[in-house]
Amino acid sequence: MNTEDIISTAELFVRNKLALDFSGHDWWHIDRVRNNAVTIARKENGNVFLCELTALLHDVTDEKLCANVELAEQQLKEWLDDQQLPPSIIEQVLEIISTMSFKGGSRPPMSTLEGRIVQDADRLDAIGAVGISRVFAYAGANGRPVHDPNLKPRETMTKEEYRSGQDTAINHFYEKLLKLKQLMNTEYGKQLAEQRHIYMEQYLEQFYGEWDGSR
Image (tube, rainbow, N blue to C red):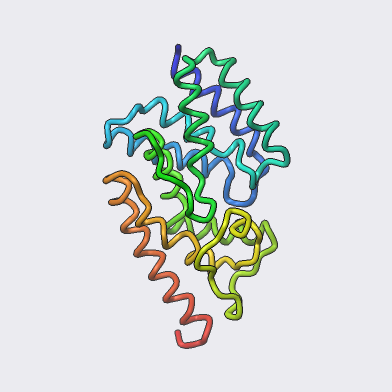
């Protein structure tokens, strides 16, 4: 198994899938998550190859991005089989991808170190300066307003309610982004999340000041 060739092939596979995404889930999101995953894996003594490969592939079956999730899952399974990877690696990649999404925050904990690492890597890209830019990109791509003081953040949500679109970009900070610091799995992930969380709090303070004309 030539891991470098598999990683290079995965990069091409993902670029072809997500090249035209404008919702904050494009290739550069994937690349950042991959870099986060490799960094955390090295700090936490995880399987770097497994974390990097899974991070590269983590959005190719995402229901937000796929018109036909079952078809996307089948294509991913076929691609993994074509790489002649050990069955244990394929099983772990698919298991992590299928269980790592936030979906309203009601998901059970990841069962492996590598799953916790990749989940942390993805969550880091949802917070901080990059996370702020992505939440507005996603809102715009899906026809959601920046802010509406009459729409209050939802406290608890099912997966269906989370995807319903009854929210704003600013509400998404409270419904997801500001919760992620407490949901980080690894010690190094928690360290990286701390500064990004503070930056989001500062941003919201400035936003509200500009919104009501006090700043």
